[in-house]
Amino acid sequence: GAVVSQHPSWVICKSGTSVKIECRSLDFQATTMFWYRQFPKQSLMLMATSNEGSKATYEQGVEKDKFLINHASLTLSTLTVTSAHPEDSSFYICSALGQLYEQYFGPGTRLTVT
Amino acid sequence: AQSVTQLDSHVSVSEGTPVLLRCNYSSSYSPSLFWYVQHPNKGLQLLLKYTSAATLVKGINGFEAEFKKSETSFHLTKPSAHMSDAAEYFCVVTVPTGTYKYIFGTGTRLKVLA
Image (cartoon, rainbow over all chains, first blue to last red):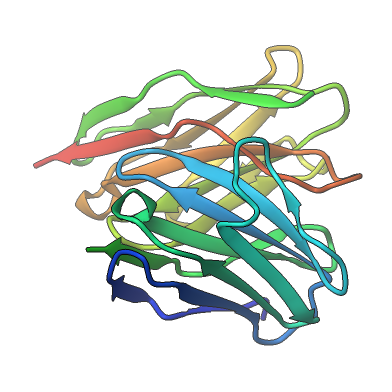
């Protein structure tokens, strides 16, 4: 149980385009999901907390207009990187908060912006 | 506020010898503590967790960790390293109230020598 999926697992896009990453909790409902970013050989950095039915809460320094988060249902949160640039290339990981307030992590999405 | 410090950025051991990855935490409340492992270009896998039950926690793949409140430590150990243990390890602290955010350590890269 407590499986979280991400789609796509990797994506290449051109500079200036937007890309959407999906995070799904497959066998449980999650009112709260989290989005992280991880640069090579670094730790995970929390970008935002996604709450079903309300606006996401962004961490300091994260541009909310660039990283759009939508938590439309209890099993789906999406992260849209708008007008992507090469510096947005990174590994994006989501997690979903389970019943015992433990986070379950997705497998990650590798974004490369050319 | 909560924080976690992983004392070693890199650890090298020979195959078959013990592994010790060190983690110290700071928390104003009773924390929950986790160890995750991340293999290259992969997502996070939970090794073990401490949530105020037994102070000696056994995890998967022969790993265990001991919660020592007096030392504010949660070190990860394994009696005998295997080549497949080579990966990045993250210590995580959270407080199971409020935002349920995870605070990640900076990571320890474990290298296992043949």
